Image 1 (cartoon, rainbow, N blue to C red):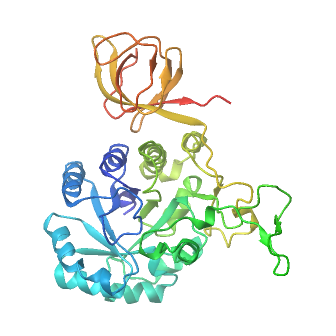
Image 2 (cartoon, rainbow, N blue to C red; image 1 turned 60 degrees about the vertical axis):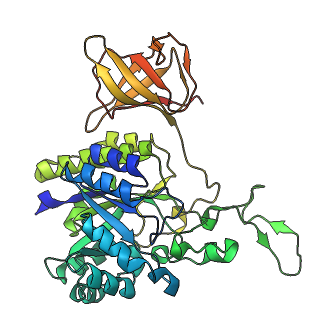
Image 3 (tube, rainbow, N blue to C red; image 1 turned 120 degrees about the vertical axis):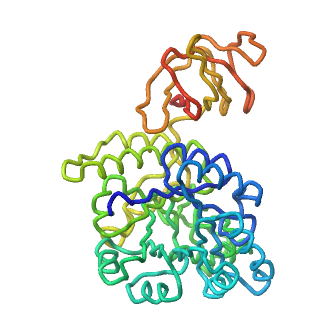
Length: 410
């Protein structure tokens, strides 16, 4: 049974879908252009979704589509036709949070697998069993649960009800994402896909009788980010996660970059494979977390898994990400005879740059850019243009989808 543990990745667009699966995800979750909770992501047209399904299914991976907004009446008008379309093109499952949406899915796609979103706030075994009786195949438990609570749910649920849980990514200040702060501050409804991330903003305290006088909650002239959570990271605790009965390990981040998706998925893939291949002799490798730190991130926390968070789980000084490395190029092709890689530029780089190169399920290696050419084979010193095609001499063989990064100067 442990061999069936799923690594589930976010896919904000078609490129991220391909990157996630290439770097080791067993499945991806994504949103169409309606009905999902990440309206600011590029999301998928039906045509792109068909391309994504073909790419995924050819590699034995699955695709789940989010229908997890908290819908109002007008949101339901086009839903039946959309559900039928998703069913017709072979979507593996839909993710819902609302009983009405559940009913519409069952009526219009009777054989569609249905997963219950974390937005539904499943925090106990009675709720899990209730949803199972309504036709739910998988429950994505609330982020506010401890490992012991998830264990108890697993011990009292039907054996064929899957449990999915977030193990990595941004945490929300509100209960399982049900937030009114964005709506109040900007009239953008977070529960209908338009979160403005008001919890990441800078705040000061104002006393009622002293309007216009702003007091920092602590001594810093910039204010304080009192709602700003650290990022969840459970890569050090995979054996405990799996022992709790979680069968799908979910990475947050449909708004994140392809580089972020590839970097995080790669580390979790390595860690998960190492554990599944030999649980008794499994040993955690600090390098997995070191690699994750090379993608943009906030400081890390284990969230609610080992008890309710205290004050240390919030970031009071800044809402900024930590970015120590830049993703500079994606490998498109490699000529074994000439040792020349064709790459697509993602950030500017120069002759003489020290770089790191990595691929799916491989260790990274370092190199120095000594020679490079543009698409017309003219030797150049710098690659300044976004998505510019550049040829680089790399002595060690690389493959399509490999990534090149360089450390930021301090």
